[in-house]
Length: 284
Ligand code: BGC
Image 1 (cartoon, rainbow, N blue to C red):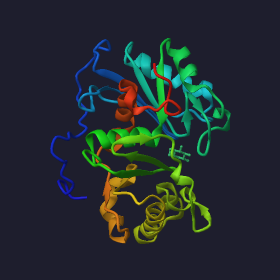
Image 2: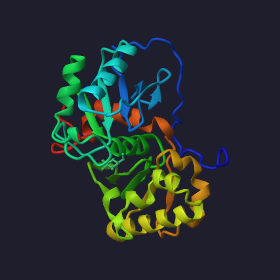
Image 3: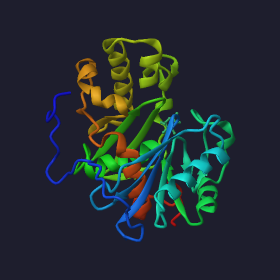
């Protein structure tokens, strides 16, 4: 997509990693954000006032199988790598309610029922906030990206290995919406329209774009959103599939890029107002 074609709204800042060497984890505006994905686990300290990464992120391959103890070890290694003693927020690609993993669509089944905040907290010796990956990306997007200052109903979908979703009402998150599992053409939507399906099936941008369009129109009919934000790595190539999206709702690509999960995890950990009592995680 052409540089500058998606100018930031006034007041928003781009996510620009800064290499500043060791980051003081006692700073009260810095949180270590950890983004747990199917292929990699990435972390960086985040300035929660600006959403900027304070140091270059580190990435460790997701262990296979990605069992709870194996993933916990990587989380602890990343905390150690930054010699981090401050607050920590992490994403996880499943429903997280009150610090527990409830589902496992794209993760090891052993996670179901795991008290993830307790597990990570015990490994690193202090509380950790854990939030659904798409919710975290959505929070970053609403705070610093394409959703900044957008009232009403905003839905962000992340098109990746699966399809994640984040629903906002006047800027407030409704946690754990699982709109990637709506039915599309008789299948789970993420089996039809995720970025992974496009790659695995070698679908043309047009063919896949039309599927994404059908999916977004389905969301429209159910939620009547004011704005749809498309995230995930493929959103960098939004201009390739945008011509096939014929929704009545405005659709825009995410702006926070690869670091949205890291930044969003940190934001949710830093600001309890992103959580609801039944949802994202218990207060630290
Ligand atoms: C999971 C969601 C997750 C999404 C993106 C889906 O399969 O059910 O919880 O947000 O994948 O990782």
